[in-house]
Image (cartoon, rainbow, N blue to C red; front, side, top):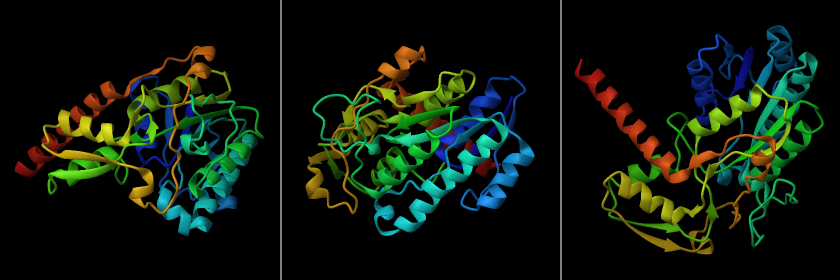
Length: 294
């Protein structure tokens, strides 16, 4: 099978690449850099897909800076909407399966219970709005998987909440973290396994793609420090006191019913994922130090 991964330098794209290679099926993986595949350039994107003719396109490339998107809505729209349109049209040209990585931020967070995939999407920030528009484009195609993930952390990419907390722990003994937003942290390595499992099936539809269990950002931070031996006091604060540029939904707990109905495995509990990710970070740091010593 031939895979095309967009956004392979990011957390999810990077781990999708690693997951495909680790399975040892001799699958071909195309992971073009932005200079080779600019998804906002329609002509070149369609040409690239037509020339390479992938069987599966895993569309991870996205504008994901939630706060910056509020003031840079044109770029967010160009990447998340126009770029997705180009990828979807390219997939239809060659008949490829299309996996679109979306977000829990398509929901407004006002529901008392857990969100089902069929619940009405009402995003409250530009990032969520552009990702929902991307979903609507993808749903025009017959061979699609839309996978809504949340609070992603992984070894690649520009950064994530776990790395940020560990960095801040080096210079702070007390931090204030939002405690009224509830969701599921997601290890990109676990998400990648689900996406590749989906790619070998024809169980098309909309699915949750996050680790089991729910927590707040505040309690998540406390677990990060506890697991990594950091003596940092975490004070919980309300979202309204944090003064972020973009509004955030307070509740993005996602039901796993869609996974169960299709026979896909749940991702492990987020706490288990955090333990494994912390170990991976430590191993990476050790390897970096060994290279420096040489």
